[in-house]
Image (tube, rainbow, N blue to C red; front, side, top):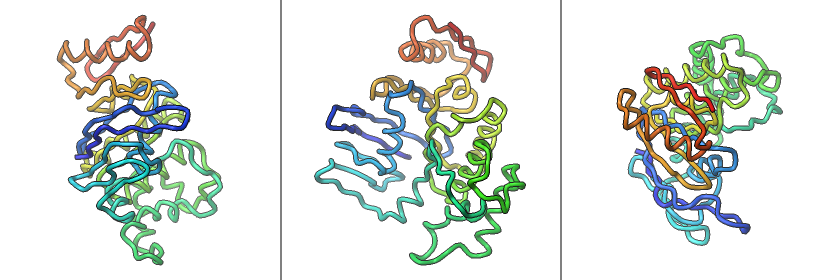
Length: 267
């Protein structure tokens, strides 16, 4: 279990995260739903250790990753051990990489290699195999800097899969994709979670897409988690509560219609 307890973060100008607490389970897709500026990216980076929280704790499978504050913090795992627990798919990706797709994907194995080791032929072939499984064999041998947004997302997903961390945090992974590519990415991601039992936490603006593919929902507003729900499709109380949290975020005029595992929104 990935456990976040009372996590806060602030800049000199003021707080961004206010005492965030939640659990995310392995084998589960958790959607972090909220508007721009609600703190979703800051939360993901704080859990990963890319930002140092002002207070709170982060643990994964009983191993403490962070506890304390900026002036005095503690954790029980090394950077290499952390990489075996947490992987990251960033929102903005650097298109300036000069290596091939499979070389980039193979970097996911760094947590399992020696300090000065490079991926060998076996790791590179594993990377190629993953690209084939994800339905993008045409990316093999391609330069990462010459890809479309959808192809780039698949390369990052393949790297996260090869890293084989217990939990993967993804910041707006479908933000730059068209409708078809969004569903392709989420279908591949869902298949990966079913096969590996990795826990995925991803931020998203589209509650309809989140509802279709996630089983756990965190609703975020102004640096706080205002709702924490697990999907129960046939339960009217669940639907009513889900809609209520969406209205807190998007406004009272929002209308939600549920059709099995599908959600349609309007105003």
